[in-house]
Image (tube, rainbow over the protein chains, first blue to last red):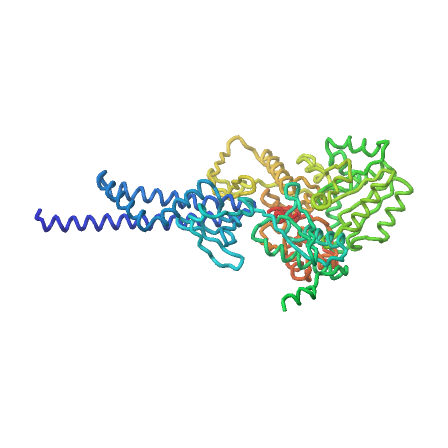
Length: 271
Length: 343
């Protein structure tokens, strides 16, 4: 074999290796998407186990990508120990200089999945963002906000910010509804109205383990009646709050329960 | 007879005198039930049962045992606050034991819809005579969660499912004309067939095709007939969950001609419901009969379109302003509303 032939063969080999590596990674991506879609579709068939099944979406994605990387490094590239060390050195330098956020996010993603910090389907508040977790990726977690906006929150936020999980993996979640009444309104009647509005809602979920409660708070110019109850499906959070508020206000009107008005002196202060 | 009366008749077959007794429906709790009625201290008793399960028959036994006044709340009356119905209960309590049927009509699922219920519970709490009350199971569960009504009753008796053999005995004794029981595999029997079977864990269920091997060795036709009959009644008991009224209604629609186990299915089994339809059905399931006007109040909108669809699907019947549960559709409605976890 001439040197020219050897060079051509070597180039062909490198192209083939590169092609195989790309094929494995593309295959992993497609398999990950397919598995996620199948698990999500299966989860939607069971309202009570929806969140539990969706928990496996990021786990399977991480496993698939992990296996794909192992296959690429071990079988396709067939790196020697020296090459592996050299690549590790390059990666280390890359992390040190520019990829630390990306690697930090990937580690954050692993921690979220392993520690079960939150799951796909949970309603969470991360930093200033609130919404339903729709995807836990390698780099970021996607939240769907109440306004149907997809927000990508880097997984490193896990290490720097507090996370509030409204349902912690359960399909149901507690919703707090607040209604204000005038200081001289019939408080007993108003409390009874809010309680009835809570428990008669089509979205409510109530049993011994999911009780409801109505509390009253006094303020300078009004009193707040705060009702807390569960919805069977956390996606009904805002529909439930709206339904309860609307029916409570209609009943206030019927029973002559006054709602607060803006005090004149506070308007004067603004001027 | 109107269609709605016909529905009532079909479901009511179960409680015709002499066919089924309170002991069958209450099982081991029957003795405790009689002791509770005979007790020296008057305590309110709750008889709780699924729609058409024979709750009325247990209350009939209570009427006979106590020589009580019988009062029944009606759907069309709406919540009977200050109405003749509650006044009648008050008057009856002064003269002796009382049996009150269909107490699920004492509330309406609206703001301010529990006043009559509270008034009724106050009445029986202060009564010094025995009081037996009948409740729809789904209404009872809801009211226990949101109003704690279970604390107002020292004794609660559940109308249980009827055993398969007793169910077969009751249904077969009622008709002269018998169907021809046919095994599923008699006509098209092959040694190996693929059948879809349900594989489930908790409330998850998927159907998967599994091979089924049948070897026609050592069988004669009489064995097949007996087997087919047993399988039909086992399936009837499973579909109706041992509910006598539901099983009777299903049987009424099946009992002539050839009958295979796969013919026994609940009405409306393949219907796809949205949330409003499921919620509406839950109200009807909890009340058994509901005035259309009450549904308008509960839903907050006209229920015409929803009721039209549910009627067409054979889940309810709507006649003269009254929405009635179809007995044959109770299993479907129960599954649909329980899976959505509507209380």
